[in-house]
Image 1 (cartoon, rainbow, N blue to C red):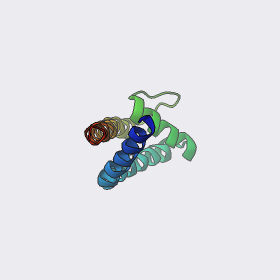
Image 2: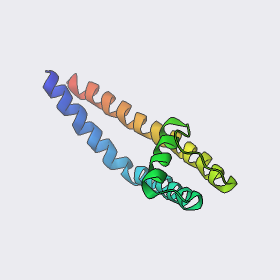
Image 3: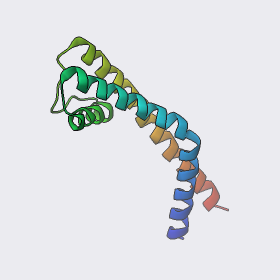
Length: 107
């Protein structure tokens, strides 16, 4: 029973991800693009810029790197907002997959 529910959950999850993939990939593209632009402005390595992007986007906190230029700070705010949207989208997909699993598992 548990294996069947797990299988149903992952099938529903991948189905839901397939539906929202264009939106999800667009959000990731915007976040990474803004992060690389911040890295270019701040003269950071690419790895450091990507690290900053995901720390800022997923935790709404600067972490180890802090932008010094005003445009970089504004871009970081944008990364923070897109990170909130990304987190909400992923949570919605997981909740929908759980609801589908529960509904299909009761049949």
